[in-house]
Length: 415
Image (tube, rainbow, N blue to C red):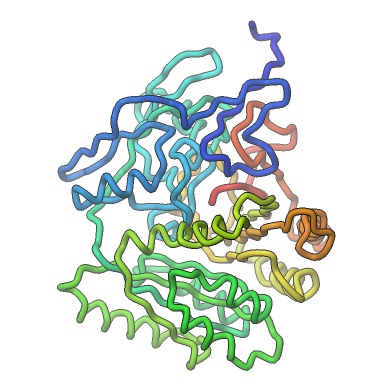
């Protein structure tokens, strides 16, 4: 149609982009899950990797690579997402403090550009396109294949949770754990607004008896903070791993009576959110609006942010999990399109709300959207930094306010 065309094109993977960004008004939506490409191929050796279609789900990659005793290094919390979708955002979970996001663990891409060209790109070949596409939200091309780095996969996971009543202590312990050589392979935190939130957000694949025990904690109605840790290991290493874990836990300042542990297979831990999905689908509560708000906030602003949001805005209840944990900027490649805060450590804060259909109450869509707006306005009013709003999915035109500067607060979609 030529360079003068205003036709927009959006790539839709598994449908988890926010604010309708995987749609294109009067344009073309490419259903990436219909893409048929070469079969997934695992390459072993000293530097193992897997070649996959951009439409492949991460859960399928996990199953296939485990057959070779291997697995990708970095994950998202939910694995039923397409490779092209998460690489167009960032792909972040509790492993990011060590390995960086998924976009830091890609060796090569095949991309269809806006001109219709099929281009292979990597750090050494068409590098400008390679780094632009990673975290580029579909603005520079659509990812059709990717080469993902792998590492030896463990068989088991020690899964641990501890609780805090004080945010400063909670944040200090998290930052201590992600600095240097941490014992743990996965570090995340989440916020518990009330006891109901504790029971709802205590992921069902964790020990249900522990959630009941934790709900009886005398917190005087205060917000609680949960630190979630995981240590990967093989059965023959259990004695050494247990000692390492106890040594690391002794350095934490959590509520002493709130140490909860579980031991699960590696694949069960990584696919933990899917268990909750199955239960929600059975109750008709999965296909509902999800007005999520995902933020990157620098360490210097996280305390005032937490005080204001959890003290003044979200005081009585939450409509879904609230994640809050730090990552190391040094593990992110600044050549990609993802815009990051300037500080060496910044926090992911994710409000993963679900709205009750047709509700006009506190669990309704309008109320949750209003809360999200209040959080963003708070950041502006309290001077937490200029807000740069990134498109939250794969669309074809940048908002005018996007720059490659490093703001103090960034709104993004990367889970």
